[in-house]
Image (tube, rainbow, N blue to C red):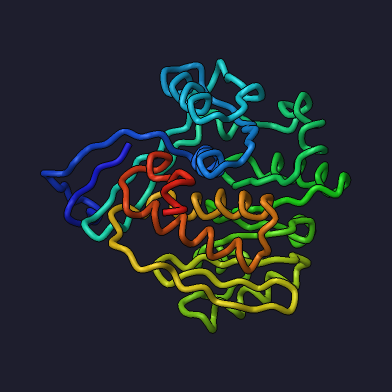
Amino acid sequence: MVVKAGHLPVPGETILGGTFIMTAGGKGANQAVAAARLGGNVVFIVKTGDDIFGKQAVQLFKDEGIDTDYIITDPENPSGVALIMVDAKGENCISVASGANAALKPADLQKAEYLIKDASLILMQLEIPVETVKYVINIAAASSVKVVLNPAPACPLSDELLSKVAIITPNETEAEMLTGIKVTDKQSAELAARALAAKGIGTVIITMGAQGALLLHGDTYQFFPAPVCQAVDTTAAGDVFSGALVVAILEGKSILEAVPFACQAAALSVCKMGAQASAPYRDELND
């Protein structure tokens, strides 16, 4: 649920005259839709509430061509909800009530274990319990399936867990949470990337909003500036980046080609309001 106003409110402040939009969101959902719109073959594993939001979400996924056979309906918890404020410059602040997302436990995934073992690539986020993330990563590692982790929202993760991740895509805040290094520019981003690589992660990509993205892949270090555009709403830009990245990789693009592809997709997304609604289709990206 998004309200766009002139500026973000400070504590105790009420701002009148905003514009209200209700749009589908959630990090995992945004990334699944982004990947599907760009041509990915997506199976989405998630838990929704037995409510109108959950039913609407599942129908939207079906409309996007996403495999919904492994979506679980939770009879006890409501669907996750995010309340988002967006200012005139496109910056946002978000508060999330996780609901059924927080109830997605390892036991819920037994039916989907064979999918995890046979996946071409697994993309995960941290809006589900860390124990579930760890469970999936361990299954994937045992089956030599690569995991792309978007460590958002930021929270501490063990070095043991991170060592089993093939690609990690934190933003500046998340990189600082994982390394203790404050990321403010290219130099500090490189330091944080090298600290993450030292934990055993083969590919580190730190997304830096309007600045672009920094890549550290083995001995390869490169910074990719973001395309210049007029931001309307930055909500889900990082999610679109992650969804686009996995599609590019699975299409056989090198990581040096996949990162700018993802940057282009993310730039297109900030030109539109909304989360899933802002994810570009492949023909838009090609244009």
